[in-house]
Length: 374
Ligand SMILES: Cc1ncc(COP(=O)(O)O)c(C=O)c1O
Image 1 (cartoon, rainbow, N blue to C red):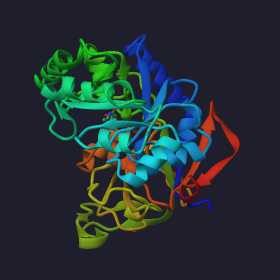
Image 2 (tube, protein in one colour):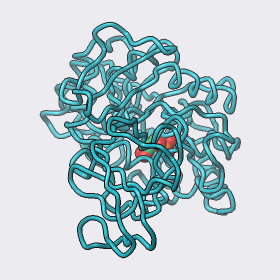
Image 3 (tube, rainbow, N blue to C red):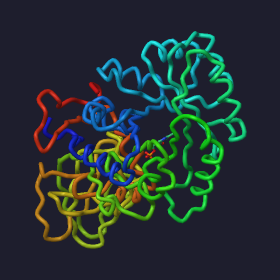
Image 4 (cartoon, helix red, strand yellow):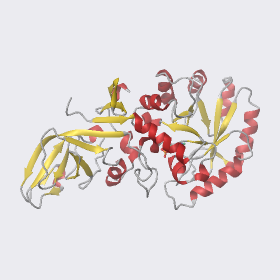
């Protein structure tokens, strides 16, 4: 157990980050994006921690919403961001009082055909991302259809930003304008902003914001760190040193012999690999903390192990703690080194990783669970 890969989730950090959302977008309703198992943090523990701090939750699929309802998240709005709403799904949506986001013709008619009385529905408008949503020109028409559908209540209008992470992109203001022109005179709540919109685009705050990544403490912007935005990392991923190698000059490490010592070198082998979800594309030079000190990967990531160059003179022993990201090492930095984004690092952790949940440094009784149990 002691050499297990552990993801420690700080529920207090999640709440701190919600407070940051409210500081950036005061007075706006907040639906927390907890899709993909709460961005890999555990949707249910995250939802329990945030329940009384947000106005609702947003997930992608019906199954995610059902897990939340079954886990006790009743009486709280759950927005379904991309559920196609087939016939079987509609029955569950009605029974569990979920809030579907309608994004294409036919969905509204299917809801009506099922006699979905009392359901609150949202409508997605495509303001330029061209992924999901009705064209802006159809907003009024959809509203007319909704008005003619007895029992369905319009909750509001949603659009999604394509380039909000780039504060220099002209796309965001264009999307905000296109969306606002289409819906500002229509009834219902208006929602545009993801995390990047929350922190960088006040014009996108509208009535309701839908932050995801910033809740987990990673930066939503390309050119600003989480620390600058005063976000706290919610997850710290750790393992330990399982072996130590002393290399002579010219010797190599790992598969493909991609890293070669140019002088005698100490290599710490740590018990984590792509089998745990650590990115295989993290190359030599990717930062990692050993005993809280910054070191770098040397050689390829394998399924169960990584190899770390220990700076000359730094003491290291088997059993020493290794931090892959989190407190002291921003996930954004590791993601950059691996050619990916923090979203993917979090979401890809495998069932082998054990999770523990703490609040203000105290582990909650009974909350130490593995990814399987979440
Ligand atoms: C429709 C929608 N809204 C909100 C979010 C949250 O985005 P972010 O995690 O960048 O804040 C997402 C995530 O992809 C989304 O698809």
